[in-house]
Image 1 (spheres, rainbow, N blue to C red):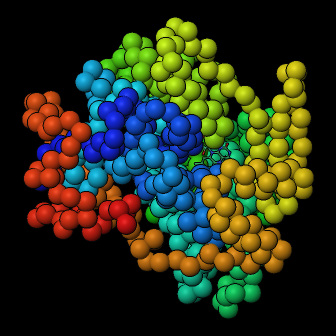
Image 2 (image 1 turned 30 degrees about the horizontal axis):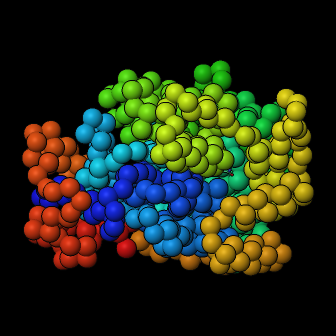
Image 3 (image 1 turned 30 degrees about the vertical axis):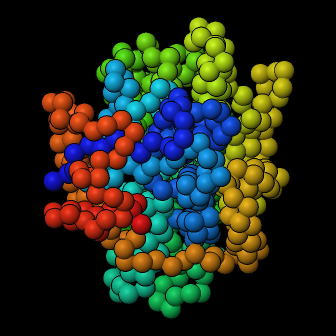
Length: 507
Ligand SMILES: Cc1cc2nc3c(=O)[nH]c(=O)nc-3n(C[C@H](O)[C@H](O)[C@H](O)COP(=O)(O)OP(=O)(O)OC[C@H]3O[C@@H](n4cnc5c(N)ncnc54)[C@H](O)[C@@H]3O)c2cc1C
């Protein structure tokens, strides 16, 4: 049984304009920080406790850095920002008419009213309608994914060490990365380096350097957004590392022991592989559909909201959609798109407090600072627009790699995280050792428990939605927590609340 909905706690002090931000990623966090000095109450609601620096997830998966270094706690990052509170919760309902956001944390349902709303809930992995692939080929979007993947990669080597069957060993030592975009390229390169260098000589019955790393894509090239020249250079560098690149190869089935690939000529073949990773597509947060259903805003094929030029949705100049959830021509799904979108929305809110009307807003314009992807130690590709022209400066190799390191350090949140990362990088890149190779059973086996939990959570949210529709949820006073209906934070789980012990983001 879930608790009836309670109103979100109000920030102490004046009854000010309420800005609610959904998401603590690049869009959400940078929007909140931009409102630090504004005369508003900001409530940031996110389903994870941290601000995740996704571009370095592959380094967590392959043991270079620890998860905490790329995921500082959001409430600690924002602790000095007195006009801001951080609430943990999965937002599952937005009522554009009532101007409320409803979220769930464990069995606790919270309703948060807003005057302005910034939706920055990002995107998930897309399996193009084959969601069952996820069980055997996890994506790379969260800390959970990265840790599970680390467990799967190292676990495959451990099993191979114990196996006496050559066919089984070959299957265990074949790693398949699906999707040859930046994430796939980075992962394939790192798995190859790890097996070739870090794990070399660490086993007695197998030779880790004999592991096969396969990078697959249905497209005809590697790193398509970087153009043919850089794509070919990246492919050549990967091949030098021993990565097998298989293009024009579409994955049509995935199971525990491998996957089935369809070639361009229609023939199919099977690859035996225990450890598969999916980095082939994205699907925007389902909150986009909620907004679309109520406002008539269109969605693109990836579920992104086709926002108006000021990043709002039709009929609602107070609702902004930013980051990976927004579809804006010429704006790629990258960190800069989200940061600039989040800051734009915050600036528009501040301007409206000074009397600017929505029709006076300047359209959002994206400043392309360029893109980069690492391939391996000492090797990356980089593309930077040349000001005043439509051309781009392109380079690859050592200097691009140094540029990647420098830029990612700058955007990593927190001085200590930067320092720790720098130290870890120094050792990983000079000695080829990696300090984060620990794996726990929880990381490897928690997926089954989590799927059961997700089902349970969906039921709780559905029940709350039904209650809200029938009017039962509107009972509490604005700005207060109803303590008789909702237990105080940290209270003992109620009967039937088994999910509390398993909730992965709750600790
Ligand atoms: C593996 C990987 C590598 C990448 N590498 C690069 C790179 O090198 N360079 C680059 O520029 N970009 C890179 N990107 C893309 C970049 O990380 C994203 O474009 C960026 O994070 C988008 O920011 P966002 O705020 O829209 O979403 P996110 O950063 O994904 O944040 C979404 C937030 O919303 C929260 N949330 C989601 N749903 C809900 C809900 N229902 N209720 C409450 N909270 C919710 C999440 O917990 C999270 O806090 C990479 C992405 C990945 C996955």
